[in-house]
Length: 407
Ligand SMILES: Cc1cc2nc3c(=O)[nH]c(=O)nc-3n(C[C@H](O)[C@H](O)[C@H](O)COP(=O)(O)OP(=O)(O)OC[C@H]3O[C@@H](n4cnc5c(N)ncnc54)[C@H](O)[C@@H]3O)c2cc1C
Image 1 (cartoon, rainbow, N blue to C red):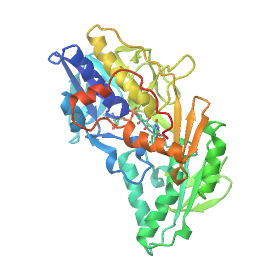
Image 2 (cartoon, protein in one colour):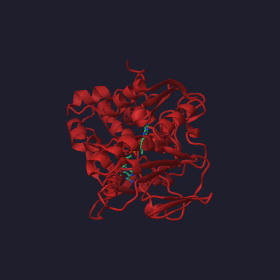
Image 3 (cartoon, rainbow, N blue to C red):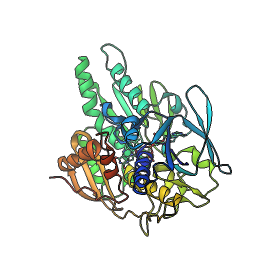
Image 4 (tube, helix red, strand yellow):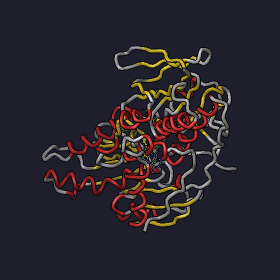
């Protein structure tokens, strides 16, 4: 019996597992190949929704997705890889270390928020990088609005990129709802977004004016070109000398690929991602593949993939197909993904639908919001029917067309 080990069950890892099981069935190799997923948690996390208040539907049990397709899984953290003997080390909850051999390895361990050495940031800032962090923020916000809590109703979001803008734009409505539930006046609510560059500039010149208008209309204060010098439990201090009183600081700036990429003797980019070849293999370790936020892959003749589920999901489906094909000397498929769109949630203002790498604005407001909700609530979900046929159908190793604006 041969074995494929997949590290991680996020957008890339889950689809790698389903794609691999699909190909295994197609080749009639069910009795010759075991597929096992190692993940830190027992769920597939819908990470792109962690800026939202309602997190109920963001954890899908792995048993619902992997058991129907006969993929095994183990909860634990991969801590070491022995490339010579082809084994990984997994640390499970009771600190037990287990060694698992592999014939092919797929690295889909994703990314994490990068926290720079700003005084107090690590200790006092909240974030929305994981389900647990998003839940902790939610609980804290409710605490701040408890009657007579004496806590500040100012929320500061640091980072004016994609995640920071989505978080900030969600807050006015969310805070008003919490305040009303607690019988607290809403006129004390302040939301401030800070960035060391122009807010929204990382998304490009085309969408920036729309983003700034949405922030203005939502009465979100902005501090562009502002460096944060320190953070405490009660304030944020900027290098300009401005001190903002707040007990809620949300850090959203900067992502890095999983530290497991450091174990590979391979070329990496500035985000710590491994450069992969056209088949999503790691060139220096050909029995190892990578996809999603740990991989820097060529999407067309000019561009490389970005850390996004738009790239992680198709890469997952394709890497699943390729890893099984490679094991049984079948042809692999070249990864290319030419179409690129960005859809930014702007809270109660709506959303922004942008096309291409220069992010030309296609639609802004309520219409774009409909598409964003469709993506976040339906399209990025795997079939929840616990049915192998449905899962395999959704895992075809193809690039699915991107939804156009819904009317
Ligand atoms: C708030 C927020 C909003 C976002 N919005 C968007 C958006 O609108 N559109 C978009 O395209 N992208 C968005 N993203 C980015 C998107 O979520 C990521 O690009 C995507 O999750 C990457 O998928 P992945 O499978 O590579 O990694 P992940 O989804 O991070 O999954 C990695 C998995 O690996 C597991 N893991 C990690 N290390 C280990 C280990 N050592 N051992 C075992 N398991 C391990 C983790 O527990 C996790 O389950 C957003 C991200 C955030 C945080």
